[in-house]
Length: 230
Image 1 (cartoon, rainbow, N blue to C red):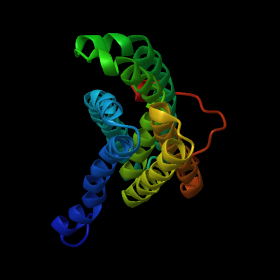
Image 2 (spheres, rainbow, N blue to C red):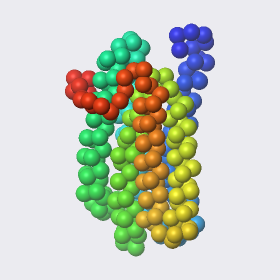
Image 3 (tube, rainbow, N blue to C red):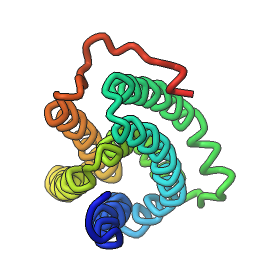
Image 4 (tube, rainbow, N blue to C red):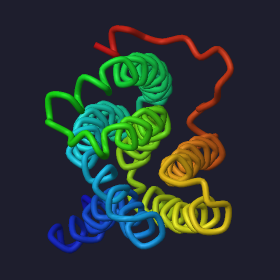
């Protein structure tokens, strides 16, 4: 980015981020399309109830991942490999800890959230089932965004987008299998998204570990540096 036309360099780096934000929203959109067509209007309404919560979570995790991007990019730009490795390790630790907290919190307050948003009685149980399973998606969603932020901090904005597109395709396939072929209803729709998002996080982690070996990124001795974490 320090050579050539800076506007062109910024555009090349940033367009995958913009497209990625669209694909992040597509999980819920595809869920709505399949559920509306194959389960019914009540189920579609139940999925729609979770949309604001889903958008809030995505926005929150994208914001947190920006913090990891900034710290990693500073270490990467300074060629401080030791600190870079520590920054990535502590990001993974913090992500794991926050994922557990947010998942448990989401499961505990999901019923209350539906109550304060005046969810209609006829779709309440379906919305509750869908919401609780979707809160299980938090670790996958959180890890994907943090790991993508790390990769972007090291100058790679394309690989996270490719993985996200692949996850959306898998989501559509799983939705068709669980909802249409296996007739698992709204819980099947939620589990399809859970699998797709979890797989996207796993693939992103393996890509990070395999593509950046020269920076000593591995899961051995994963000790957090809380100074960097703060």
